[in-house]
Length: 590
Image (cartoon, rainbow, N blue to C red; front, side, top):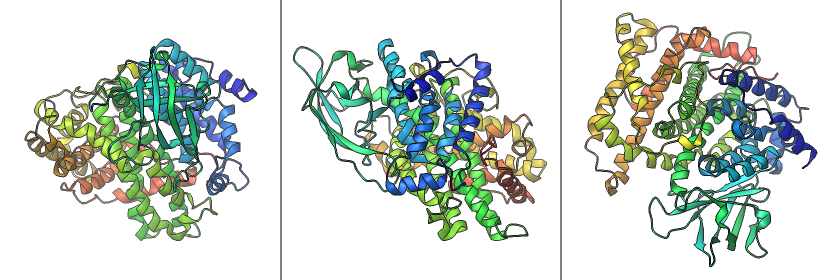
């Protein structure tokens, strides 16, 4: 084991401690990493944006920052505390990852989170031996990568797949080729989703944990590196297998469990991605505020009020959605799958639209990678689709949501009890994330129940007027849309019908997912305890819901007087105080 690996293992050796300490510990780790990474705008900082942009231009990972992450044992964030790591709750995982993603999405994927995607199947279904092996690998500074099965509407990463055929005497032999795999050339473990049954269906694939160093000569070939338009600092190359031996003890779970494992673990991956890429968009918003305020003695020009405050409200909404989905993975693990898919469906669209709005504020400066103060826009526009936030990600979320809509309309909407208030309450103690308990079907719809409950509690506020009145009116508009959606979804063809693939049916995913987003905003606003006066005030929620409502096409009231000004003042305050535009108002390195 190298000195760096020993440091990483030692840093990760302490267990997670009692649940009451989990959140404080995660905040402390995130703050420490933020400080170690330093001022992102300092030109001489080896971990600053200029150094990261330079690495992107060279199409190489940033060596100094990767070494720093190894020294602090960053990979321990992906290992459950029970196996010597730091992973307790999914929402705290996202918080611990944000300092890296705030600076560079490609670094976050290339150096760490891909190992989490790979290890998820082992945490969900691996036996104790496999779990300990993967934990030791990651805590020792090693990397794992995931070799996905092929999905419909696949991008380059999700295209093509492997086949595992039974071998004489037991086990399997692996065949096939994928040209685009992140970290294929430097991974110490391959988690392979391989087809083991030629028939289509839920038992078609299995998962294997393979050590590349144990492949017999001539049975595994590394393919050349692939240049991508986005995440250029991550290392993408291919793998080809030609009869590689796959012993029976490398099987994760049971034969044919691959599709179910993908569905269980993808909900974690989707929610974490949404939680961390929002921090990357936060960096671009800070750049836009800098562009709108630098050199001005007076207030921000009125023409920038709408885009700046609108994007700020969207980022708070995205953070609310991701946080709720992440917390649900521990609190309601058998029921979180639809919520996670809906959040992953909405957040990428909001972020893409937000980047377009910020581009108008930044102008040409946003595409200048020689300028760390402004150039983050260009890099994030390129990185987001490669990070799984493109069309393939949308299609996979539709595949989760659409088959559930008729059942939810018939059995859950306006009939189910609200979720526990701890789902939305900041600082609430929650159970640890346990991949083994994650469900993939059924479980009702706690977000629809929460939306209806929030609207009922706010109903009396319509007579009050002002921001509370607007919030009540918006809540009722979303509930009315849920009623209309229920009537439409009750007429859908049954599960398994080809009619569910009709584009008109798939559009229902848009409507439903925006309702989940509205429920998250209302729930987070209601869950405030007054510690943060801005979040306890309805202004941000009114603006966020107005933007969601406009996208959905529901009636949106005029914004109350002072609403935009209040949100703008908070945005400028956070910018000048070095605070993030998230629900935590994270203290940023200066």
